Length: 88
Image (cartoon, rainbow, N blue to C red; front, side, top):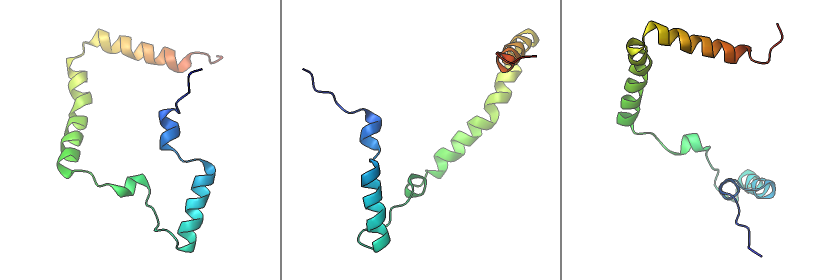
């Protein structure tokens, strides 16, 4: 029989007992407190600026190149998706 390997998500996330043990150690001072992942690493300010610049112009640039008929088709498709499965 082939041995199953754990999924990637399973490797990244500790189980409940491991988390409880770590919290207990942090509360008693036996281990240093860990920061949430958002606070652990800082983002490169230049990359953030470039990403924001592209994000600000992206939707407007796309809308400018679309024809009126194509915009209508997109809007109808979106409306149909919103109302799909709802009783009138």
